[in-house]
Structure formats: C-alpha cells, structure tokens
Length: 348
Image 1 (tube, rainbow, N blue to C red):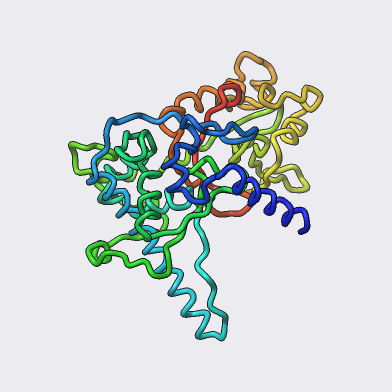
Image 2: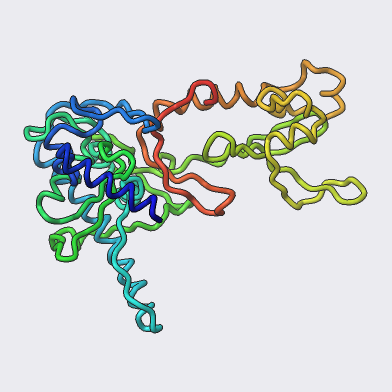
C-alpha cells in the first residue's frame, strides 16, 4: 500500500513539474496524445493501431459518435440503477457509479448500434482531421468533446496516460441525456446467436445495418492429432493459454463423452512427442485418416498447428486489428471484452 501511495505522489509531482494534462480533453488539445508530436514512448505500451484516415470530419459525424456513446452510457446507467434499486430494497448500500474502460464502451457501443447505426461505428473507428484537435480517432474526438461539454468525466490510464484510448469514463451525476436519445430503442445485452438482422455492416450507401454474419464469428471446430491422441484446439485469448479439449477414457480405455482441457504441451506429451517440446510442430490438423494409417504413413498427417494458426491469423489480420471484440474465456466461462491492438506474424 505504501508503494502505491508513493507512486501516486510521484505521478502528482510529475504532473505539477511537467504540466502533464489531467484530462483527455487537455491531452488531445495540447497534442500530447499517443501518435502526436509530443507523444511519450513508454516501454511495454501497446503499439498504435494503424487505422484508415477518412479526411476532415464535420460536426454531424462527431455528434453521431457522441450520441452513440451517450446512449451506451445512459443504457448502462439505467441498468445499474435497476440493480441498485434491487439491492436497496434488500437492505444493501448504494454504490457510486464506477468508471468504465474505453474497451468496454466500444464493445457496448457495438451492441447498441448493431441493428441500426453501423456507419457511426465505422466513423468512430477511423482517423479524422478536426479543426480544433488535428488528426485524431473519431472515438477520441467524441470522448474529449463530451468531457469538455460536461457530459462525462474521464480518468487517464495510470501507466500510459498519453494513450487516450486506454482512459476510463463515466457519466457525470448531473449529466442530462437529450430526450431524443432516450426515445431510441437500444440494448447493451450480448448479441443473440440466433438473432437475424438484415443489411450490410459498414456500408455507407446501404442501410447501415449489421447482419448476423458481421457480428458473430462462426464456431469452427479445429480437430487436431498428435501421435495416438485426438482432440480439439482451443487457442486461448493470449499466447501461452493454448489448450486442447480431449475426451476422457474409462478404465477399459474406451473414449467417453466427458470433456477435459489439457495444455498444448501436455497434449504433446500424451501423444508421445513430449521430448520434442515443439507442440506447434508436433500437433497437427486432423487429416481425417484413422490413427493406424497415420502411424503407418507420416505423409498422411495434416498441417502443423503452428502453420495453420499463422495462416489463419494472417487471413483475419486486416479485418480485426483495431476492433473491439468479445472472446470466450474457458477459465472464466464467459465472454471477455477486449480489443485487437496488434498482430504477431510468428504466431498468427
């Protein structure tokens, strides 16, 4: 605790000495945001995402992005108030509204706008030239102007305050959302996997609506094999979390329907290739041949999983980097909010 207090004191002193901004508005206004001339390179900070530049932005586009954020935060407050009311009726204490990270906002914005305003989402994810702030991300322009106009309050990231995309925000207590926005039906609930929505995602000339295919990646089973073992690859949400789902065997050695997750290294060991310690090469995409045939003819084995991951990642690269997403976590048994900020060619 003392170390944390000491770090906070040092950060306050640094702000006083250097005049470092305490808000996202000042950060963008004085050109100190990451990517600007005054940006500070900090070791370990996420690399800036290269996004399309769409020219000069007009006030209408900024207003649309602002409205999408306000609708998202307003719906979140409405939902939190309902939970708080329930707690108070049960004798619980009222809690202060918590800050929400930009990643969470972007995911919730995608939920809110998924059916009727995909064009605004596209504008929020693009770079623009603004008369007051210069070149900036559409989302960041909306955040700082909302803060300037008294709708929200922001909290810069403790470790990388110059990266505005990592700030957290919340609605001010006295913020009044325009009545016109309250009348618009929206939801921050997760996308229903059987929900059918017509239209094309991100098409300025079309309806601007999202379809099911643009919202959900299909669950593709990746069947793999190593030695005498078979299973299904679970890549995980970061490097080092790769697992393989296998079906347990009973005492007689018969395969049951009970699932078990093992690490990629453990799966390699169970397949008799543990000495290699190169699971990306040892584990192969299942080629459809029975184990007996594969053991008799190595040429019938499938592609190494490492190559498959690199090829698959390379295919998705341009389509996902810079976008928010919800990825299933086997550990938490729920979807985690995240953002694709980069791509590693060596692993895909």
